[in-house]
Length: 232
Image 1: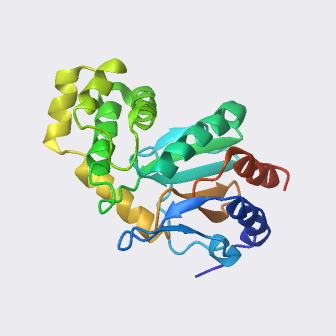
Image 2: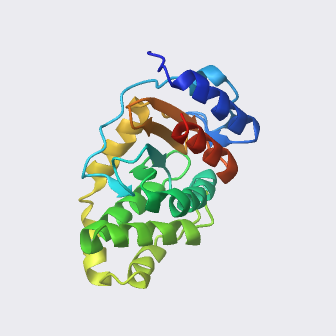
Image 3: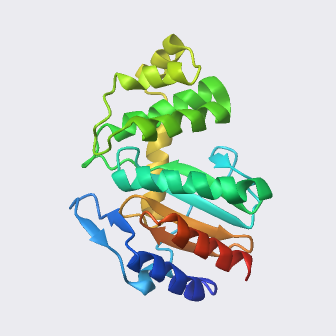
């Protein structure tokens, strides 16, 4: 396990964010809620991460100074909170080409068995309406779900209609299960990159340094991390 040259100073900033209260679900085998306050664990990437490419869902410039690759579960309450935070971050930094957000699926089946099909639903939205509809759809999923496996599956086609997609085409896509493999590939990539809970994110700087974030960082803490990188 290699320690990145940039990860050490950044880990200090990240540790501060963790102390402020970032939480995440632990390994899917236990389902516990933990607070990670070990600076060393934030300074290393446990494994490889799939290279960002055009198969990903990306907001912002993929060549931005800061790329946040997020692995998320639509039924995780902390992911719901972090989704709002990342939308705020993109409003502030995305248009300036400073930050890009890459969304990948990490459904925790043992805790949220509905999340995997919800992830497939977002892929159907992308197929039928492109990136704009993907982001509109997933934003609405997070907005409507009470979290913790609380979104009624009957809401999925309703959300499709609400964002302007054809309900029949959406249902055909979703029932086919055609995107199950893609969702599973994201899940396996999350595990390979060191993810043991959600949200699990990795910050990639323009010079290729990678630093993981475990948990739902509040806006101010995440902004501090981004500003530290941009002023480096």
